[in-house]
Image 1 (spheres, helix red, strand yellow):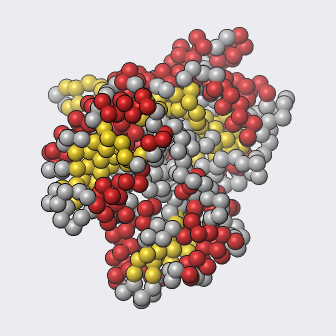
Image 2 (tube, helix red, strand yellow; image 1 turned 135 degrees about the vertical axis):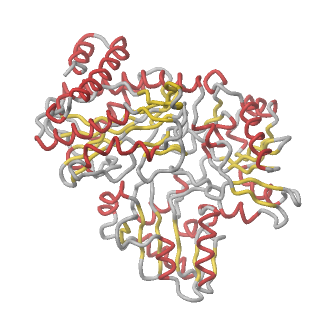
Image 3 (cartoon, rainbow, N blue to C red; image 1 turned 180 degrees about the vertical axis):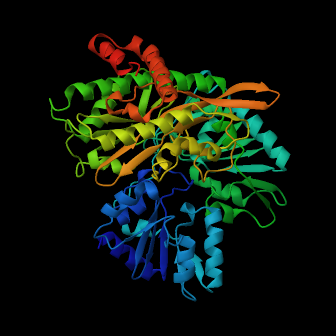
Length: 590
């Protein structure tokens, strides 16, 4: 059993808490969190980006989704923590577990700042049923985590209108129009990505996500940015003041909310805003629970942002294509392992203009590690890359012009018929989705079948979504759109940047994933309606060495050849010598 788990139980006992919940979240319901907020990792040892730890006096469980079943199973071994596989038959949800486990009069505890207002409502209903109580004003991690990192306070930076396409004032005006239509006097904004998008600012407070720890409030006459003032340069502060934005300390958002005018109306997304902020709203203030008015405008990229994405993907395409050449020409000749491959790709990216840094921890997974969907190599798990089998590389970068996310699966030498078969079937599904044309109003759920159908024909599948939105120099995972057969009912809009990433995984053997980013584009509008289609942003060859053409029909081959012709046209001018000659072969028609 982990020592940290024992220490947490002692702290629970001292505070009279019978059941304690540690989610992965920060104060903003972020997917990726800074070092200060990685308490679930500290207590459990599980390093995945998603999961919730539930601890009682004699039991502990960690809930996570299908991306992490294999990884969590390995990392929780011997920890005293049971893996609860979300969505699997017989596995209760956390609320269902609480309903069954919490006894009459017992106390449920958590830090209310890392639990959303909506989650709190659910926990409160359960506690009331059990005549129990909730303690949400104690952060037990502070008591047991002696070397807990402080809240990050890295310098923020400003994106000019030449890159964002819209000024801060234009964005504020759009938000106020939406507030007015809903009858809101004040908007309280908690999402780090939405605050940064609205303010045209970026930061360095979360690894791989260029955001700053901040909240924002908007009224019809002013706006407030709650942030550590020390991270803002004098120039940025002056620009904010010119645009009517007042700067207040980060933690003052709670005081601000307490002082909202009587009988006014505040708008907040209870699925995002933390429960402590919601608790600060005066009883006389009406709350409108609504999706943040920044969410859709942030997801629908303007023409400047789309052009930036294209430029970023050219530079990223050069870097990843050079990695592919390096792998093919050096495997078996020089020492090579998962970590050294990740370092080599980072080296190639750093050579590209306007590169900022990785958009997530690199997934470089050789052989059986490829079956761990979100495996990321460590010094302990790192293994050599040998001249056989498959290497899965899911990586991305932030550039001043946009964010990238790409997966390629490489044949490192001789591959089996089974590996080639599923490599090709996954590629077939990827191409079918990328070639989709649909009538306006369709959601990602309507299109997901195109990517999965080749695998479903074999009675196979993959346990993750097919596509997610991508932010503009923001989070590599962005909503509201999603491509999944159980996806959100959000229509795909022109300008949305979305991934296309089917996969296939055989535990203990290999993993395959092919991922391009796409942008939704206008098609034809006629008597039958308005039609849309995808256009690929990612420009990197697929590894033809692992393709079994028996599984491709002539239309599939045409799609692959057309994509490779575009890759060749786009990337070749940036290569020279042997690399250029190799690219001609790597993008040959089949």
